[in-house]
Image 1 (cartoon, rainbow, N blue to C red):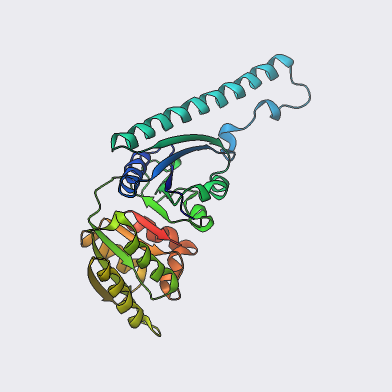
Image 2: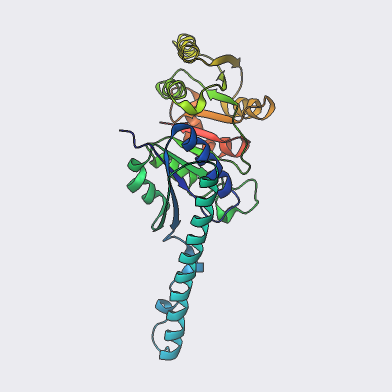
Length: 285
């Protein structure tokens, strides 16, 4: 069931503006509404611990009262900051066109929020790195892989700088997931008029080439200009190189497959691929 709604996740990081621009681009082309979430996590660690609850025997009442007041003030400031982030995000999306935008401030675990709310959206957009990452290039958002694993909706992982998407790179291994990614591109209006490169890396297995021909025919029948690329090597290396060198603005992948592309979304290779790829990544279930 479609909802004609996109879910965008924002925090205070530099990636949030890119998330908003990607959300506006997708929603504008699909005539979707946008729901923007800012989640106040329950897992903020020692920095946000309940100091008043850490005092036991012998504490003076005045100290307990001061710590309790500090806890309340910290919570209040976190909510006010969250509302400010949501206001800015809403303004960015609305500035891109006539888009219906709602905001949600939620106190929860981020992945639990996605699990609870993903049925209210047709796609999820999240930044490549979270607020805690700062400018560290080798650090990914701590919740990113958890969201990719948990979500049953397509997830677009935005990089730091938004740029208009004109050319799409598709990781193709012939498996059901990659074939579904091709069907998703063919059916979705946001991709119309874009150039598409189908990339297969490594040794083909049974029926791979037949599926590659079928995928090409599906995209061409939908009006796409398709280029087929076959290369030796590890998929993560081949895809990252092509994405960075050949001018593509988006990498589209299926979530699972039956060749080595499968490893891209499982275990440590997930973060390695997303880290090395300098363009947004759309993961299709």
